Length: 238
Image (tube, rainbow, N blue to C red; front, side, top):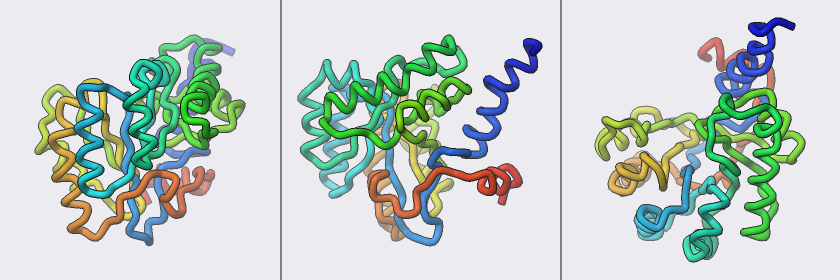
């Protein structure tokens, strides 16, 4: 197999079928319902995660946090607060690196390492995992399968991490992209934490005014891994 053919199998097909098409991963819930899932990546961070948690508590909303286990160990008080306040804690990654930059055996091991670490921190076996940047290689796909976790993508990306992002642009992006059964990705740490804490009260108010019930992934009705039929519909834009 030539280099180009190998890259197509290792990166191109997972990008098209999984990352874009949603094959074998969760990308949304029931479009006929009014529930939407709110998720946060990259934490916990003592500078920004408490601000997010304060807003969620004030609104009586529970969310899903895809954490880095190293940060969970460094900040056990934040991890404890996440669990005590009823949020869902799931693995993001053992190493926060784009899947395409990792050696295949490292990418294969990462979902399992992160899953076991989060299970050790929370006492609960995770069902889902979201790789950094939502990026997949063939090794990532096989690593998730070997670890017994299902990948999770999103339908709403507010680009809170972009250099030109502001709380207003983040809020507007969620409002514009939101549909029933959607999955929102925001960040409670890293570059996205510069804008998300300030945008979150308005985002929650907008969702409430439109009649959406905001829930963690575990409570998102109709959330299931995508099939080949779903991929075909997605790639055709239907």
